[in-house]
Image (cartoon, rainbow, N blue to C red; front, side):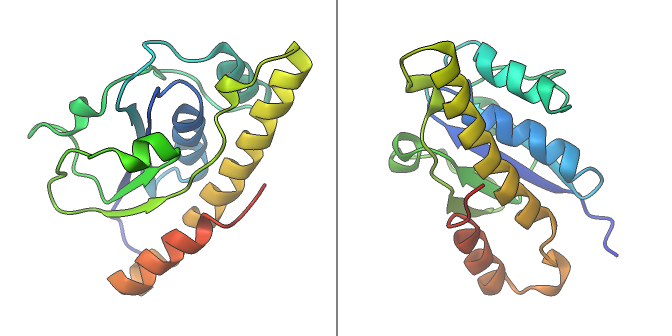
Length: 166
């Protein structure tokens, strides 16, 4: 068993909901094998309260979660990333900074629950749906035999995970 801890950066535009939830889920499910981070191209500056509530209700730690710019991860003193996963179309279509080490990347697009308007129940349903999808995808990532896959196979697996729903 490899002792390498894989760093994963989840990118979105606002870094207030989807990427935050993915970060929390991977940090818990991938403990010891993965270290997750999240950032946004245009961070909202705060984490969406629906995302925080959902994570807490599902027993995921929210400690240290904050909305931040992807610029934090493009500096020389930032952790080296093994994987970059975009979660929304706007961030996927933007020009990302150059990441040292050329990490593998994939697009795991999911709807933005923060854009849902309506009752609290409708908003909670939207957040729950996205959370379930992300939790399923993260579980698949955590269970990949990364050490046994070549780079091309691993890249293919990252893309195929995007097709999984919660």
